[in-house]
Length: 466
Image 1 (spheres, rainbow, N blue to C red):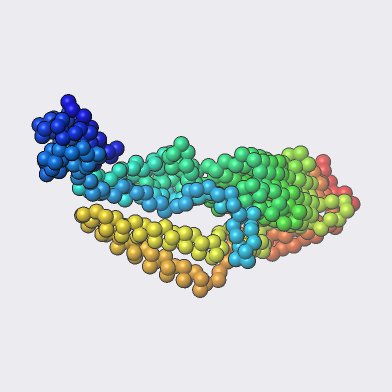
Image 2 (cartoon, rainbow, N blue to C red):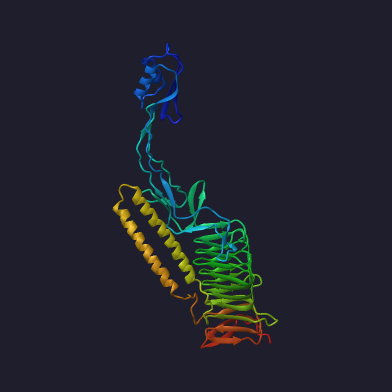
């Protein structure tokens, strides 16, 4: 074959010819076409260009003689996220422009059946063809929903949702949801305040000035400082103890168990069980307050149990002001339920998700050729949900009420048991009756009868000390 060179572009959409021969040795049309055939060029050949080159019989360099058909590409599938799962250790910037290092954004919580991410499906384009005859497919690229632990996919395969209440996170490229938030260390400036829909397990301490809030139980292996601990529907367990410095607040719908409690405010709906002592704290229980192990001491502050109190020692020789009781006042006016502000925040979060869902549905309607009647109903339902949420938010903003946990209770047949020493100078309140101990007692049970508070020795061998 004479000096004929066929060059195909990298994308195979064009082909060019070069011929370095004088007029006497110039190749024939058959020779040129055979070179094109051997190079594999079969599509988009401009025969007029080839004929002109052959007829002019002059050397040519890189003359394009074939053009493929470029595809008209369809759109790739695209993920539309309802949540920002990019973890951030940056502090929240307040309205005053200051960094609040206690409010570090790092935990994204979800409700059961809450949408996490949806997929806009790919679209078909118009296929093309290159100069060697290969089809260039124009369909957009698909993408797989990143389904992981405790997540599910909708029937139409377009939306990933949470199967449980919990927090959502990436692991190995998958979206996972867990209902136990495990903090492998302290709650401090590294973690910021913690709020979670589920259980929280903390390996270390909760440092002063921070807040831990969960819908379920909270387990703390270390100490709690001057911090706020709030369990909406579960228990609180503090393995070591609470040293509140007069500022700690512990609130739970379940029970509280702690090694010790000092200088704190405690309000729980069930029992308070303390392994060592309860000192200078205001403690209010919807169940019993129990201190029967080790020192078993209640000293200073106010301690009220709706179902009674059991302790080894109450009060002190130094007449430190100590009050114990059953029922009586509404002691938990701060309430366990979230305030109106938190309800508004939750509704606004739902509103944001609904707005994103509406945006996705509108984008989907624009992209697909057929928008099903089910999707039309979903779109309408989402619009109605948005309007309803806006009304609820407005109603709450116009209302200022604060719920309470414990109601007044007249505690007939409920008692306070002091196994060892009840010191003088202790104020006792049961229902509306009050009593002030002017003597020290050993091993007594205190209860109300005919609107009077009675102190009865539990053992005949233990008597009153003048």
